[in-house]
Amino acid sequence: PTPLNKTKDPDISFILQVNEQIGKYLHKDLVVILESTTYPGTTRELILPTLESTGLRVGKDVFLLFSPERIDPGNPVYHTENTPKVIGGMTENCLALGVALYNHVFEKLVPVSSPEAAELAKLLENTFRSINIGLVNEMAIMCDRLGVNVWEVIDAAATKPFGFMKFTPGPGLGGHCIPIDPHYLSWKMRTLNYRARFIE
Image 1: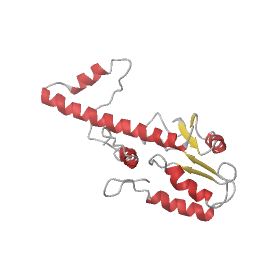
Image 2: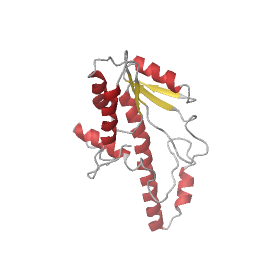
Image 3: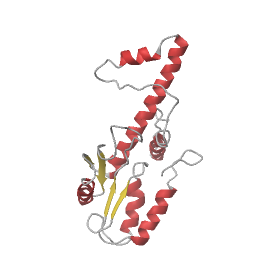
Image 4: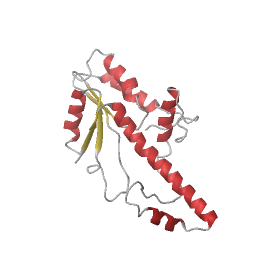
């Protein structure tokens, strides 16, 4: 799990604990795959140094990847096997091994050029959902104040065959990740002297 701390900054303590354990048991031919949603750079900045500190070569002796979990609990159509699996390897050899491994479970794989690309893909997915859920909920409030039926507005907008994705109002952001994940992205960008104002 990758929650937030009291100041809404990333709490990566669980990743650090597992990383410490990996360091204790690291051996040749080990494959390490981080699936927890986290800020871009986590795999390279936190896990890679642990692997390299042993003298083992990443991409030759041990293999490191980031491949985000993509589940929608209760979804009757999309489940683990038929949801495309994004994979970013630290090296080409790492990626090739990850593809060979995940090919046994997933119907479609989406290899990307780096762990950071995979980390950012997951954050984009969840930030996109968060922003659009917030937008449609605000639209519902505005429609109510204007005396307009929000469902009619949404259905009319959804007839546009491009550039629009339908979201519907509800009680707010659900799940353990959607309200949290945008904070991971905006936190990382603040460390690079950029404020993601729209996300925040």
